[in-house]
Length: 107
Image (cartoon, rainbow, N blue to C red):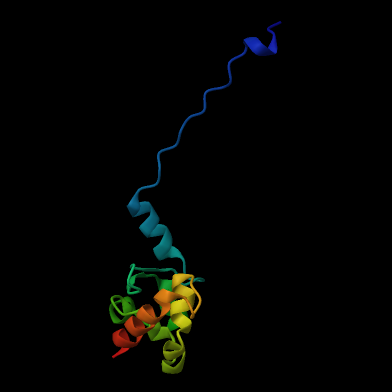
C-alpha cells in the first residue's frame, strides 16, 4: 500500500480559454436579457437581440449613441444617468462634466 504523501495529485487537463468568437456567440444567443457594452465615453458599442427585444432598438439604430438616450431629458439634466454610469454621485467633481457630455450627446 502506498502512503498518501507518496501519491501525486491527478493531472488536471486545462481547457482552452473561450475565444472572442465564442463570447460573441454566447452574448448574441441571449434573448431574455439585454446585454450591451458601453465605451469609456458612454456610447453603446455592442447590442444583443435581448437588448433589442427589451429596449426596442435594432443594433443599427442604437450602436454609437450615448447611453443617455434611455433617460428622459429631465433625468439627464439632473445627472441621473451620470451617477449610475460612473459610479459617482451627482455631487462628485466629475459629475458636472459627464452630465454636460450626456446632454451634448443627446442633441
